Length: 349
Picture 1 (cartoon, helix red, strand yellow):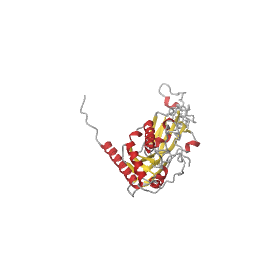
Picture 2 (tube, rainbow, N blue to C red; picture 1 turned 180 degrees about the horizontal axis):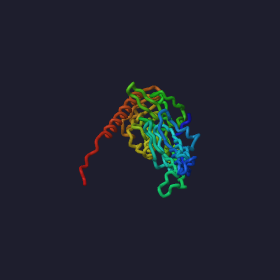
Picture 3 (cartoon, rainbow, N blue to C red; picture 1 turned 90 degrees about the vertical axis):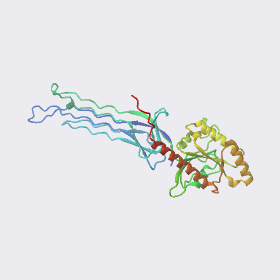
Picture 4 (cartoon, rainbow, N blue to C red; picture 1 turned 60 degrees about the vertical axis):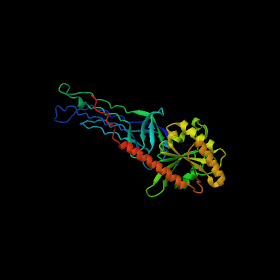
């Protein structure tokens, strides 16, 4: 299935049905009076987040969504039927933006969220609504209100707990395959990964989290080089970043600085996220080289460097447990903050 994480769609809610001018005309009833019914309400346009979806590919083949028009009123005080709603079903983590691609209408970050995008027009009144002691035979009715029409952007940001970042060929896909049941494409050339991959990490029956692998970053990615920073949005929601550095390259410190610069240039607080730094591919190095590369990377980053190998599985479980502990601590802190009562500011007139 092709991965699609942003698209433009056009929506229109239904028009309201028109009211009708009608009079009761039956045998032996001399003064029938008005009996025109109201029009039905136009259908709404909704968007709903659904479990089991992980791409917006459905909206590549259909970009126009329109709710039904309400039924027109009829004689004998019969009201028109309401128009059927139109529902856009999207993956959890989808954002809805205005046509300017900046104003956020809704952020569907929980399953089952349902947001109204366009309200249908109200139905018009029939002539029964206008009768009174003075105007006992009104010959007027209202048309239905028009629906709303606009273009919106859908942008998917995958829901993951931990994100993998690094230069191309840093071993992110291999690490993902070793840590989960995911089967990303793995090859010995840059930009093997051209779309984000997700994997479920099962450390035990009660310890599991989602790991996201995004395409590699290169120098100038924030300015559009390579695949740019388009896919960095998929790690905005993560609690922890695992930064992999290829130990077989010459300048490991420069590799770390390149990716850090792109993360900080992107913004969205990516530069402030908790980072676990790891020297990868140690299976291809001798102990002396591993020690020298790790020391060089620690000097550049100023933090402890883990030594791992995605191919051999060395250190993979340990770094996953460390990431899970940080994710769990972050969730506990967020839950405590949301449950804490607001400070009493005191009474004020």
